Length: 97
Image (tube, rainbow, N blue to C red; front, side, top):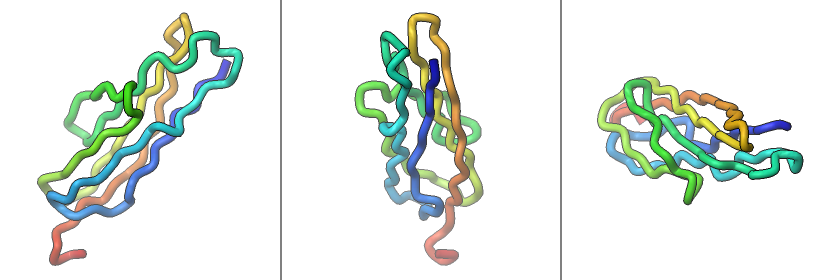
């Protein structure tokens, strides 16, 4: 049984610009009988996970500049096994960009 968490995002975004944190390409191997049961995204360091199972993505905007870590957690199977993946995102001001 294997679970693969995957995250697509823009590596650099401006403050207050809408961006999409996309985990819809996460997948499991065919031996995971119940498939993916939950996809959750943590959009920034000090945030909680948000359940995005239905769409696989989260639209978000950042209100301050700096480096953030976006995390995705994928749960699958009857035993609630999980895999997580993280990726940095840099938030910049319009002047810096």
